[in-house]
Length: 271
Image 1 (spheres, rainbow, N blue to C red):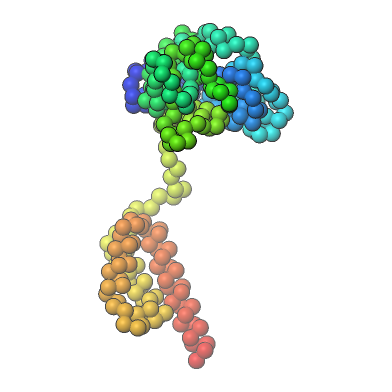
Image 2: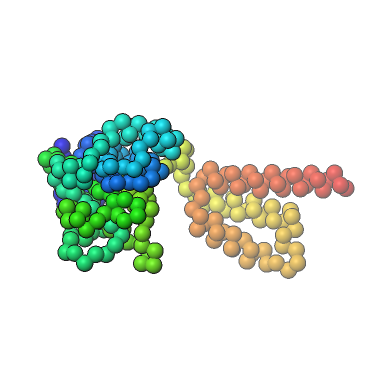
């Protein structure tokens, strides 16, 4: 297992180790969840962010068939779910227990925003002495003061002070996303076009502008006192800001040429 350095910026480590870190060494704990929809939403969030270990403390509802209907393919998390009678039992093997709450309570806890804390939390998990537990309370009351006393750190998501409370599954998604982003998600490249093309050069842009000018003339765009040079200057500025490549420039030239020929044909037929 790779040891991560605690820091505010996301740590970097090999992708396979990062995935194992999240799937095996981070545990999501739901305490007395009342609605199976929130359990299913949390499972879906875990599936999307590489987490696989779920622990439930006395859930009011647990219906695998209905959960599967809400979170398709959920068996990857659902089949590993563990059940406990108390929160203390659910986190007893954790090296650090992270509680979550939207309420700013007066107790002297270690308060953190998830984004600032995930690097150090993953570093603790990477040491391999036990899992990190991220705990969420029931929908109506959240974690009680006594349950928060059992936590080593408290995460709170910065939200609008007038509407601070999050839906349970939403809160779980945000916390899981920050863990994923600090791990393998942070290294995932953005989508690239299937075919790259070099940027259009100056000569190709001149040809494009010429074809656009001819097309504008064909549709009598300049009629009514419009200044052709002023119009073309604006078009040139727009296209240059867009940074078109060769394929895009050729496509626009083809559109202009085809449109011009179609207009010429229709006019010839009318005459």
